[in-house]
Length: 162
Image 1: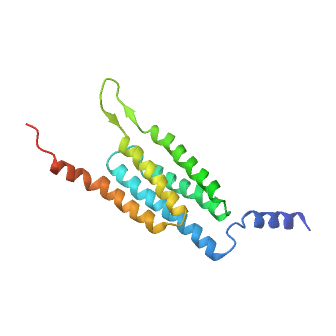
Image 2 (image 1 turned 60 degrees about the vertical axis):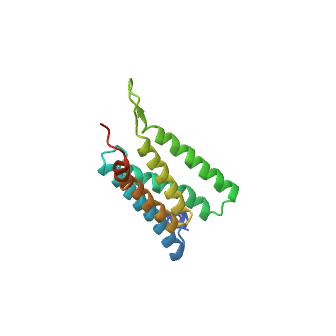
């Protein structure tokens, strides 16, 4: 076998994880959907002037989906998948902590909603990665309602201060 044949054979085997149309479609759907749903949440945050916007949320959702998608396709045992999920949740928690600021001398803490949104985005990404696309879509829609409708509702319900 020539050197070029060995190289071609090696490259083909290295890229063989998507070996049939069904699996390639499933993986493509899941990673694209995770990125899109994360992007919707990020767009909402960006429109409201928050630092963690579209790209951050898309990357968190995509990364979270991949963290569970790959072991799932590799037939990971349930206890291994549980550890993967725990690791993602803890890791994203550290990322979220970086978005929370407490201004010195002030009682106000900023960034909690953004941090919670990033955390939720990771959960949505993992949900998509695990093949629960409808659940992830429903959670994204509910999150968008919470972020957009609830603040107006709360303002209407608050009593005016005199």
